[in-house]
Image (tube, rainbow, N blue to C red):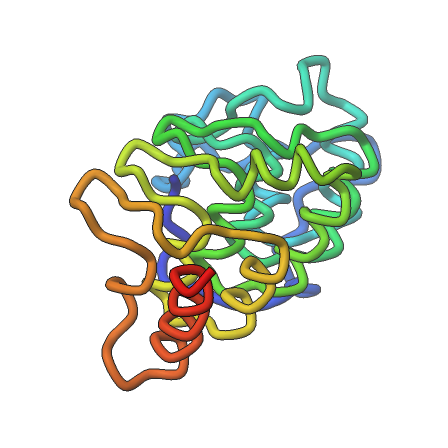
Length: 207
């Protein structure tokens, strides 16, 4: 999972312009953040990180590869837009056929990134696009290399709204990661997130 340099926010309408009128303006080769990214992938990465929908559309139209091709740290463009919290870009990519279950180099799917960042609307959108309950279940049960489900990530960030959302679709509060931790144990005691998870766990155990 790539790390968004501590940024957390919605679509950035002031993202740097990536394109000139007569074609794609490739990212500066001296840009340290993107230096190791192949030239043909830089417009996609820059547009995805900036949340520039027009630039993303143009970059994808000029891209000869697969929309699910890893572009940075094993992340697809959909992973990046989820990671940076760009809702309109996520919707655009889903409408263009991006794979909800593509895995990054850590085994995480886009829903992991949305939950880690606390982006409730994006998490809801991803679930909506899953189209059937079996696929939703599979996404909720997907674990990354540390055994974390999307609910583990939401719990770690103490994002109550996302926790409620995932629980409403059947996310398990009792699954453990490679360190033996359940989502409940990742939320600090006394927090709303911990309370929500404890109540849900109690309901599960009482049945």
